[in-house]
Image 1 (tube, rainbow, N blue to C red):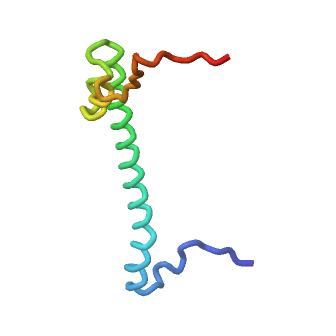
Image 2: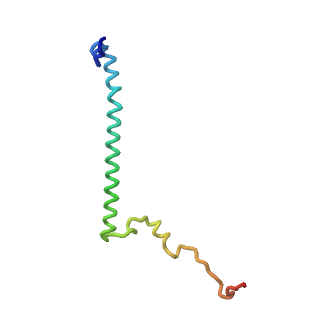
Image 3: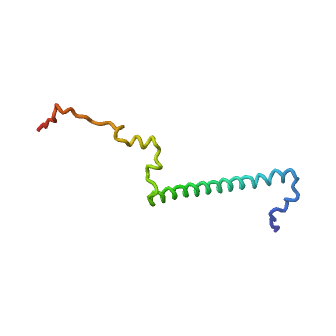
Length: 96
């Protein structure tokens, strides 16, 4: 019984098959690893930004409003809210 030797016919293959086959094997690996490294770097950068933001607030160097956009800050102002005005000429009626 003969054993199988892996890669035994590699040298017998024509050159054009080798030039096409080898990049088809390694190109997906290279692209996958590069995107994985890019994803790790982006996550680490995001976590560093969040950590700096959290430390600034904890140390009292700034407040939450320093990071809030101006349009949201203005909507918190009481002058922009709807107020309920009751006429003073009609006191509330209590029905029993």
